[in-house]
Length: 483
Image (cartoon, rainbow, N blue to C red; front, side):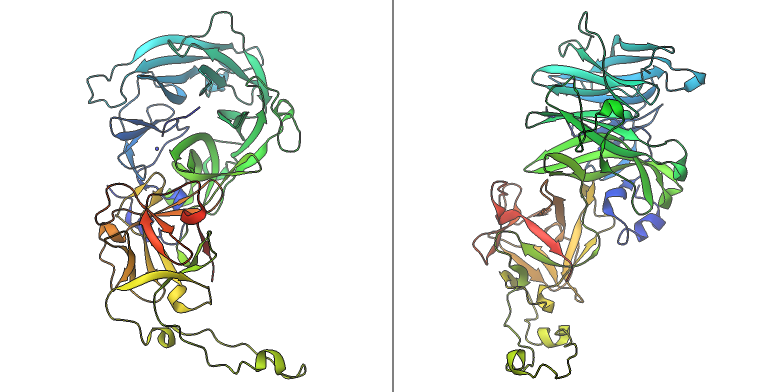
């Protein structure tokens, strides 16, 4: 399975970008409920939501209201198979109008761009229904395409989560296929396939009440697409089990409607909505977060927050630093091992920026790697850059030596250096993506002379360079550690 990929924000939001988790602070107007899988079409990203809600983005960071989706309805999902985009949505159900009778409807188009000549929705018809009496509710559809077979999960807290098989060539329900119950006590499901395991994710908790909502995303897995699905403690999802994937944090909470975003080279993310973003009037908003894998289980990662860090190479354990002469701290080395045990002890202050920088060159300075010794030339302040745009769920960042304007900059000949000031040039804007193992990949928006995407790589134990990222190597994996 390989799912597809989700004006400036109000000034009050932009002003707090440096203090809030970047994952929840998409720019523009990311207002939506029940977002579908983020899908690329004609050079843009699209997601549909309940009712007439839809969003479109050029880069996955800044989102605006999109075209109205035909059919309206509830909680749609989208998947591309071949040259078709299938769109499933619920008509009725979910307790709307006091009942649980509903239908999952399906249609297809060859483009999601309303300006495209191939933008035309074709109705397939109902692929699942509920009569309001049986213990299920035809709402919240989600696709899974794996090993050439197309599946659709659906359901809510009213009874069972059900699974049916569809024909990937037509989108129609395979004749004679009967729904299989795979979980209870959840809604807004999604499915993934990875390393021989099928994963069923669903939302627990309460929704639709803004800051009083308790939505959270949980998961179980099975070797068979039809179950049984168990969580990490062996509790079946048919008995209410589920390992936590994502919960609320900070001032954004009530995460629901998980959908996978695979970006390649070890970068996976997922979209969701927060029931309440307290920095945006408690409204339901689109959010995108890194997805990590730990012991075979998916778990929410974390985008880099504004702060000061040691940037450590996972290859060597050395720290990113400017290439400058080492400045010793004044210290009698004999005191380390010859002082009397009863001699009074006290803290030694860190080396100051003034002490370390006295001999720094005034212009450009090369960057290298070295043993981390808590020195100012090894301390980097990372900050999102308002209005500079971003990429799928993350803003572009500037990286400067702490306490200075000296800026990490991509240079010619695959080199990286520090320049005296931040100008906002593309070679000073950095993309920082968390990889599935929890480390980070660092890429410049642009690098002089580069013919394709490049990343910061430790070429040798002490030489950083901007070359093509290699997922199989630790050379391009970095850790951001608090000094």
